[in-house]
Image 1: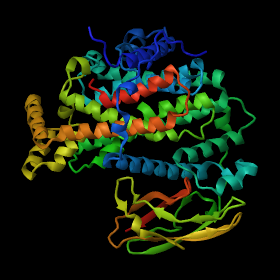
Image 2: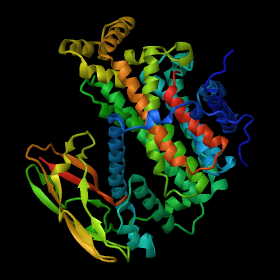
Image 3: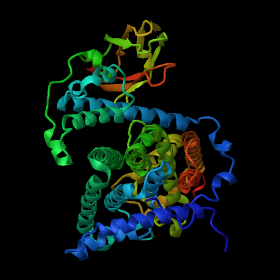
Length: 224
Length: 345
């Protein structure tokens, strides 16, 4: 059944009376800032979701045959990570028909063990201010015909309180990585904690300059 | 009489809201205690709010080919959550008026108002549970996850804002404000209603992210304009006390711009005026802060920001809905975006 409007909203739309181009030309600073904040909030959500995911369920196992495809990709944002969690929950409780039964069936299981499979990148230990660390990153080109050229850049990482770790402190080696069709490649993420960096958990996106959706969340703990 | 330029939008909202209200009414128990609980649950919804959230949810679902019956329960849940937030917000903000009438805690006392808000939160769960019959377990569960995220973000945003007021924070930036309203307003006013509508229409949540920016721009523009109307609006059309946000010490974008631009002495005075334990008459406080805002152009700057965000929303809408077949529901969404650009009440 669909709604039968007695009147048709929009039948005399405002669009016809306005110059849309007037409003859409050029991104203003507040709009750019809003985009950054949205991305950061989503990235923060990935971290939370990932923690939850690790605590509650083994996603790789629950996803069965699709695990490689799923886990070798970077997840786009918080909701996708949440969805994977709930998808996993759904898979684990597939035979049950009610929500109550679903929740009851979710069993804790060991966390994923290999760092390469994590969509969230993080150094193994917290960094002290002034220290540097390296995070290995393995990438796979699932296109069987074309070479993939990866060139990452990093946004500023921020703490929940808004303290920023500038993107210039995140570098990649090699700067540009060419991966043959169907092949694999490795890259290293080099993180420097500035000498005067405040302690906290910093998170943000790293993403490829030209491949849409190829991105990961980088989480760096800086201790005092 | 000249017809309002927003007539078509208003008609659309009224249609969606009537459908939601009818279903919502069916979810209010007819049992005791009525006088100080169930009769009051319908108080705020009956006051004729704009109905943005159910409207966005239903319109998005139907614009994308979904059926009304499948989305209605979720729209009811959104409306109940929203009204629960309002009842509690009014207490937290010590507001006097809501939609032109005394707030619930003003009329019935804080204890009863808190309990009614709690009841609305609880009652909103039932229509979501009833989705099981129409949508099946998978979709029902996914909608629950959307709602869980929405509610959590909203209370986090509210906590940020209340914390700023409690600590009389002055060193806030535009960025802090945008972060706060993303959490407090945008997820639950725009982003999740559209996401839920799309989820029900398509049964697939892989592409819900496309609504994030549109919803954020829309919600942010809405919130900034709502704050502006609290300063320069008409009380009868706006439905709340003018200048109330200043009295409450609410950190609006205009106030943040003013704190950024004013002199050290003026900033010191603002610190006193905004302090939760100040001893300054409300009228004097409003007069002084408004004078400073006019001096530094804080209001037009915020107006520009709201229009830029609304413009960005229009850009997103045009991009997202270019391939969606024409329908009254699609037109409603388009008018909704354009309303944000021209809103004055």
